[in-house]
Image (cartoon, rainbow, N blue to C red):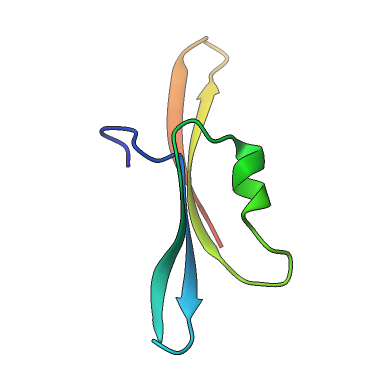
Length: 69
């Protein structure tokens, strides 16, 4: 995810029948935070990894992974 920047986010869910965690959605690099938020449902639990880009106070471009539960 980080090295080639092939995904902007990944959404995981627990598959009850299989009793395992599976990938539900993979966000393309062109997709925005709004696309990420739209992929989440209010009444269902998900685990997510989001590649967050930002600029520091020193004007440096940074990127951090956010793990969201």
